[in-house]
Length: 431
Image (cartoon, rainbow, N blue to C red; front, side):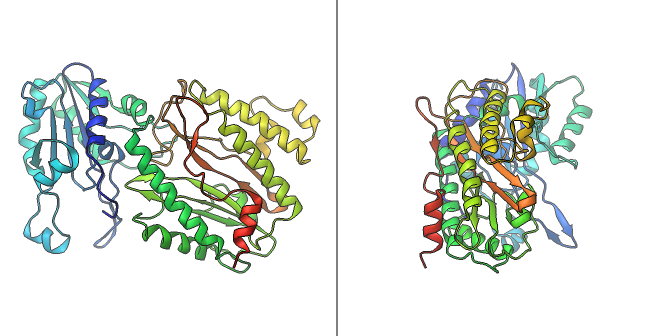
């Protein structure tokens, strides 16, 4: 891995939080993600399942974590199974984790080779009465294939029909949403790498540059700072393209007079950052661009101030909608009649600001986290209002990542990334 070693105390704390919420006499199993083929002998780069990484920090395929807090044999209350290195693997891929290395990285004392799982797991299940399966009930989940965990659950249902089944998602949602100090430091590192990429492209962008060339500048800076790349597929859209919320082709020329929207974030140690900036391609805002930009920035700043303990996610979005409505009236994009006659299920402001303002962020860009209960300290949220005006071929979205504090305003992890109009213009015209 490119990232520096992570203190295993993080994973020890995370496992304890999960175990404390398990029902009596229950066992939980977490599998690594599959390695996906692209055809012939090629595969996609391996991406570890975020749940198993959260609990043990192992970034290796074919890993299995078992948690059984009430196991009569103390050594089997936390068990890790890892793939054993053989001569072929050592030559072609490099050595996998040794048992000692796995223990050092995770804090788990009992480590077996993966080939031993089929003989040890039945012994554990004979003592357990309930089984936690690894599932994804995220409100935006988009699972379209059978996963390794799906296949494992089929086996458990068939082999152990008398065990009570329980999804682990409710527990993971509650604990992953509140970050430990070590996690906040990793996310801050990802944000700092993103800052370096953004400052790099500010000196590169000019009329005629291609969107994909900007993407290349970002990835260059990310990789040279220990990131493995983008935390999500980057959106780099100029002119009208910025009005397409999930525009990812990034294949058009940036034209003089256009605004350029960049929704880009580096990952670090599997933790995400999520930044959006909108800048003038030629380095100077027109009066209209500046007015729309400042309206979005004002909404972002005012919305950020609402992210404090006790805030309800749904109510927060209603308040942000009121802020945006006021700004759109000031810009002449809405009039009073639009607001008076609006459908409560589809407020008038949604014509120009059609997405949500904030989401949890962490190991996933749209991370697991509670949305129905009040916000608490150490939750990490994005703040990303936008105004999209297709008729003017202009889309402006501004996004930072912030941490809710126990007292006082939230901490902006992207506070060093340029965002003010004057600062953007100065940096783009400094060469």
